[in-house]
Amino acid sequence: MDFDALSYPFPSKRTVAFAKNGMVATSQHLAAQSGLDILKAGGNAIDAAIAAAACLTVVEPTSNGIGGDAFALVWVKGKLYGLNSSGPSPQSISLEAVRREGFKEMPAYGFTPVTVPGVPAAWAELSARFGKLPLSEVLKPAIDYAQAGYPVSPIVSKYWAIAFKKYSKFLKGKEFASWFTTFAPLNRAPYAGEIVQLLDHAATLQEIGDTKGESFYRGSLAEKIGEFSRSFGGYLQADDLAAYKAEWVQPIKVAYRGFEVWEIPPNGHGLVALMALNILMVYSLKSKIL
Image (cartoon, rainbow, N blue to C red; front, top):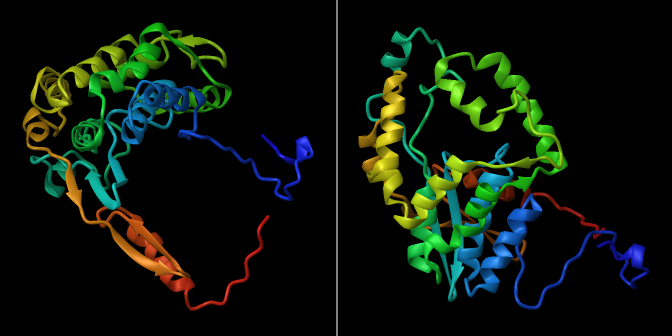
């Protein structure tokens, strides 16, 4: 809502939002609505964040996925907590092994660069420690969109088409066939407004929710991931998944012009932002509120 457009007596041209009981901000409106639905169902902010993040893996797969890493800063009852849920490289990989494959640098595609996914572990850890609702209920909005289908938004459609064009050029092996079956069953990216269903994705989210993430690391999902990786010469195995656990860490901070700015410590990249703020401290900056 642009206040100037309503002749509201505020000088700002920025978009401003107000809410009485809470709000959820994401890059896709259906994911934001999923978070709000969880708040209305009695969940707290942590539940809503998990719900929105899970929904983004469905409605904005161009930027989000179950196979990624996750970091979280959580403020609860006057204390700040940090969660590092980034996965390591497989135990069997090494520089020498990659070179024996004929690579002079790490490839961008295929199983060779794949690390242990941390996202499901982050959802499970955050839910268990701070959530109010069961993880299975928190993931339900994402599951529903994946099962029933959702209309693809224009921006997602645009980047989906870009990805399809790139992957059609570079992803030629049999190990990539499932990507095209899942995300381009009509041999193209979906158009804006077209309804997309992701039934296997829904089943995976359901199993993650029902087992509190255990299946992904020490159950049937882990076995399927390990088997698929092994069949195509990947380094990632079920043992790598079984050995993984998200890590609670102590956040790091700097004092910047009257504010405390907090980040996750390395291996997260938040340290870079804190270093940049420390550099800026030696300069006299003038600000202008737009």
